[in-house]
Length: 170
Image: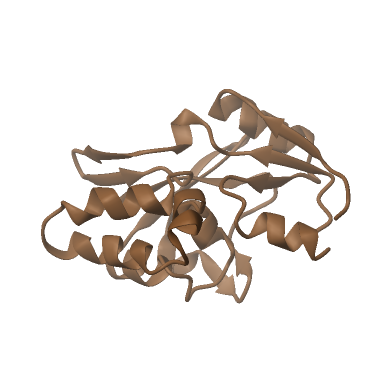
């Protein structure tokens, strides 16, 4: 594994500024995919910026739907949606199908999507629920339907310096 610099900032604003300032950076939240790729030399990031910050973590009900922070662990997703009515339980089932308990407690819902695989464990359930993504960068924020996020295998619509900053289920 090659050496890299690790940065963990306190706010979303600082994180987005760092991504703009260091365009060769990768991002990490749970690290279940990133660390494996680094170990196998399939990535050569010189710097990793940690996305485990309060603004990107958690689930909350809003007036027009449910917000999920992309750095929310799959274990938290499973626990939260297990108690929700109707179709939401499919999110719990999808999250519980991912790896072992240890993986689910580290892996994040945003990381699961940002691998760029439209057949990722959480993607199908989120696609069925018409999820919209909020994509943010130092240049601003935009919204995108999840079904437009996946371009091809391992490629997403994220632009340089941009990260998923939220998911909204109507």
